[in-house]
Length: 120
Image 1 (cartoon, rainbow, N blue to C red):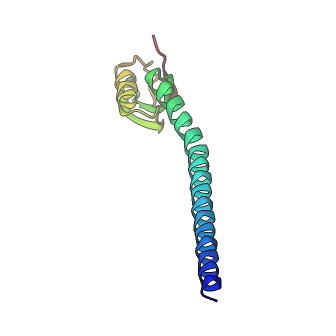
Image 2 (image 1 turned 135 degrees about the horizontal axis):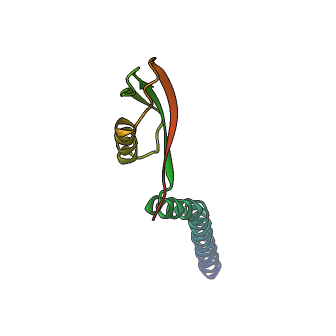
């Protein structure tokens, strides 16, 4: 009978060891799947960010303006209708519109203008 108890307890230990091994194996498999999913989800996002960085390095933008011109042909009010996405472009477009030559028509005029910025 004592040998049966030893065998029984040994069998229980082996069963516990197998279950522990299987549990660890399952946990490792789940971790590997989670890692693969995270990589699959984050790599496309990183690739999109890289493309946006490349586009930002060579911008080709335009700024749309509304220019109110006095009867004397002077730009009196300039409003940005659509921004170019960069404040430097917006400021440069407003400055260009301010310096522009407009015909003196003898009445107030409103012009819509698009200033384009292209890489050199």
